[in-house]
Amino acid sequence: MKHFMMLCLAALATAGAAAQTPGFLCCNMRTDGAWISDINYLDPGKTMIPAGTPLTMNGFGKNRVHVVINGRKQDIGNDYSRSLSLDAFAKRYIVDQDPLERLRTYPKRIQDAIGSARLTKGMTREQVIMAVGYPVSDENPSLESTTWRYWLNSFSEFDAIFDDNGILVKVESEVGIRPQVVVE
Image 1: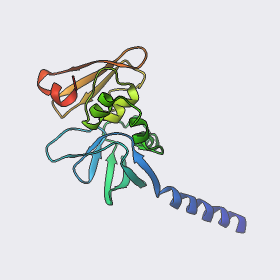
Image 2: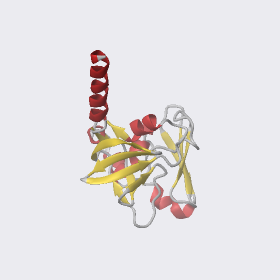
Image 3: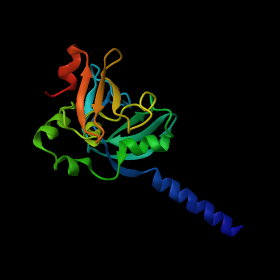
Image 4: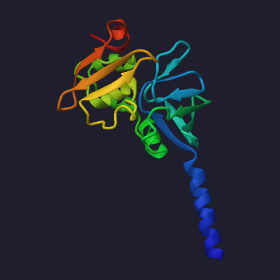
């Protein structure tokens, strides 16, 4: 019985430690101040939290990951990627390695595109993710696909199209939103 109680206490201590996990935001994400949706809409009133921003994960809720970013509690919402487990979802957005270390090694035009949350030809899949986030898994079940579908807002979509080597060769979008999505 004593051994069982010690195992239970160890499990509780481990769960408590896991609930306070430091990391970094994988990619540019937009927030209303409390909610960061995986769809990453560019809506009025939202602000961008840059890739590489330090954060602490504080646990899970229903379809959400609780984090603290810049001293503010926020939730990263699994709104459109429910085909992923919440743990797999969290691992997409909360990374151990600071993405800024990689970002600094990219050509300046790629760095500038990522910094402005837009795409430019020649980006790798990793760079596209840093710039505009992951494509939602409900519409993009495989990250190996040559086309990733994104939404700028509820009414405007765009597609990132990759070659067989995973290099961005084209962005298809409506003419009116192109300047908000692409750096030519």
